[in-house]
Length: 481
Image 1 (tube, rainbow, N blue to C red):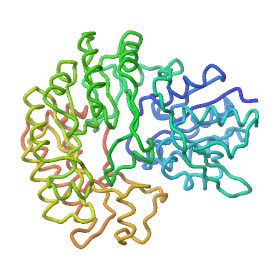
Image 2 (image 1 turned 120 degrees about the horizontal axis):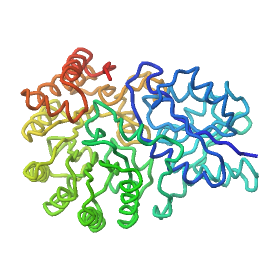
Image 3 (image 1 turned 135 degrees about the vertical axis):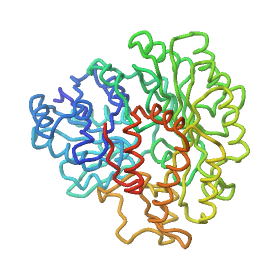
Image 4 (image 1 turned 60 degrees about the vertical axis):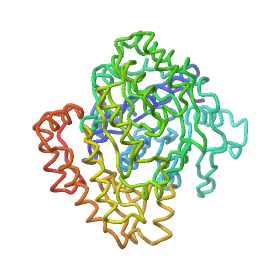
């Protein structure tokens, strides 16, 4: 009989990678759907900076029947695997279940680790309770469960996702009873402008899942399904009421891929915030430029929005077509001009190194970013993520290194290049990106001070970041906390 469940996150510092504090939104959602039937405990080795031995002792002391690991990034794959190993060592009888973005994209790679018993693909709020019911009662054939990876007679069986949660309003709000929420809400990721709040305490929320578009570099459809699904404006506002009144939240970060595509819904939420007149500020890290207009921007500002991060991606129309990005550069110029006139912090994201892109087009992207005079410009190198069109193109055209593998535990983020074409090499992309990032963003002391503030760091830390980025061309940059 299953009684005790532990929901866990590894320590991002275990293998000398950058520290990455994760707000417990996902763990809170899973707690909500499990707490009425099971005893649920959260083990966040990251927020507490636990060592491997301390983590093992916590697991041993609790002796969970089920040990669930949230795996949200390929960058920390080694940490996820280590946590599975620790769990089995601390309590051999426990069943280890993994879920999150990484196992959704690469389940078979993780399931090669014999310390992992099951991998959940897609939405854990739906599948984890069902898997637990199977493990406890065996009242239906496991083959009937979609979005699950397991072993049968030493063979890895993958059952793809066929169902998605259609009515997101049916999901409960996250339950934070098992954590000290203020330990999260008063601490944020430094060096991360799009996730660093203006004020504390802050919280994350997600009001929709999925994307309506097909950008070749994005894995959103593989993670969230082929269609975009929304929570109702009423449901979103109810959660905001709860966060403000019960948890005294002062700043909110909307992590949606497409918060603004349904303009009727978006305006209802913004009007609701205006009417409530809370002492609440908020920001959007992922903004589709083509979804914005003057009216929406004005409502956003009036409702407390202070920062928008625009997904512009390229400075040429030709490359935008390659990326399948439904955007005109004239629209980007209009939105940036309007947002700046309203007093927003305006940042933007760009991608360089797409197959078919010329060296001159890459240079034009940097020129366009400079022309916009943004508060901050982020430049990423096109990274062939699993199950993306970009990976398929790079693989078919033989543009990747012969030893390229997703599961080599050496994923270094979007400053690391892997694609080679007749127009550029990985080394050229990395050098150009590092030095143009520095040149465009730090033209004067005033801009540098503002960027340091947006990233939650001191000027001394900013200067060390710049030096480290230049000297390591953006790869394996060691950042001081």
